[in-house]
Length: 588
Image (cartoon, rainbow, N blue to C red; front, side, top):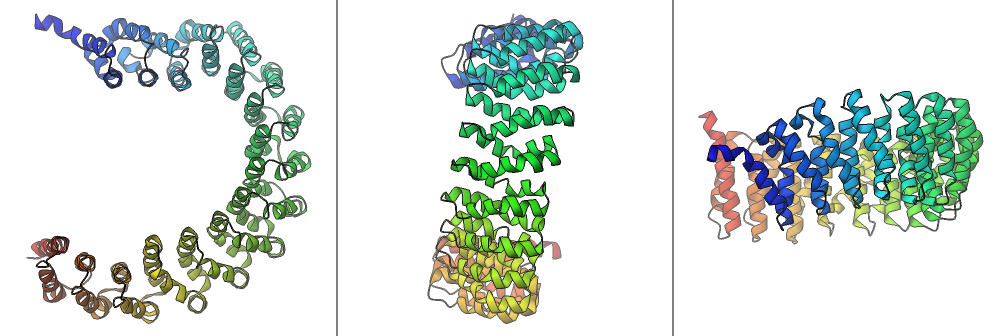
């Protein structure tokens, strides 16, 4: 009897769990659909499991979302592409629910399935589904339909294609703004599948309706359509049909539409080509850079370098630079921050002389900005300027500001400077570096913020790699060794941290002669934190020094620490001793 009942067990269990009051049980059960389908076999999955799921679309959104996702990869479990159409019914139900995320996932899964279906099944099953959703009474169905047209259109007969285009046109003029929004955001995808003859006529008519929509939420989605359609149209059609729309949108009464234009500007310029960009879009971009809404100026400022790449330097200096100067002292800190993050990229475009004349004063004013993010954004891109104006000019004009920022009250600014120092060091050379920045590197080792001290220790290691061990022995090592005797235990800890990072760079000889005696002395420190850090440091030195040094000096020091009253010190000392023993086993 048990043998007869066993095949019914998975579906019975699924039904029980999906009717359970506990949402987690229902969710787990949906996530195990593929396992249940394997147990049932392909035929019973098609005949029992899928119909059951079709009727079960009235559940919590979380469960429905998981179901929509699972069904998208369910083709192998229903018998392959020949039977893919059986999956459409439960997903069609999910396309009509109120929760947006569930609908979007169901549409996504339907697109995956539709793109794999045979043409005959697409015409017989998928296209009727799209038509039913597009004619649905409830707006949710019509919204979902908009995302399916580009899959349904391919492989249809001419009469069906005409129907689908007509249906999409009606959705573009739907009474519900949500449906028009969906049609606007999916128009670009649909247009890629439509023949060029209908693209210029029917699709552009739909596009025109959307660009003149009374709702700004529809118009702003039509902005994305400008770029998508512009790439599909012939250059002359693009100039005639798309360019006027972009120019109008850049002056739209809604700031959200203008923001979208500013955000998509580079893609829009690519669509209309370089000539129209220079004649028509430069004035539009200047308007956006001077927009009265800060959000629009932020979006426009963030695109300034990319936009200038499309222009010759003369045009950029004549039209864009005056706006950039205004934005560098904008009342909104976020505008200045957006500008600071990209303005360095203008230096290679304008060339050395123009950078020195026009951009350097702007860099300096942004480096002294009261808002830390503005200063950070400039610091992180300094190398782009150095490549253009050379290190001599950079050091004369910007280095004093950098030195000032090294003591900035905001620790993140100090951190950004530290991370930039090795690059600066390689560009400045040893002489200049010692003179201007050497003292700062040790000063950071005693900063109040741990992240700064840690970055400073890493910085010393990278400087030793850059300038070599001889330079490090002369300029860094003595000061690090002095720090081991600092009265503040945190500074003593940082000295040990610097030694652990520098030892592999400095090599065995310097480690044994200079570092090891100091570390052994630090093992007698009164603070347990110092002692267990000594144990960890000694463990890291084992691969660097000779075995004789390990046996004679390091082992004895660790044995002493392993008898320390503090439990943590004993733990790390014993751990280091075990690693010595483990390293000695292969040699014996």
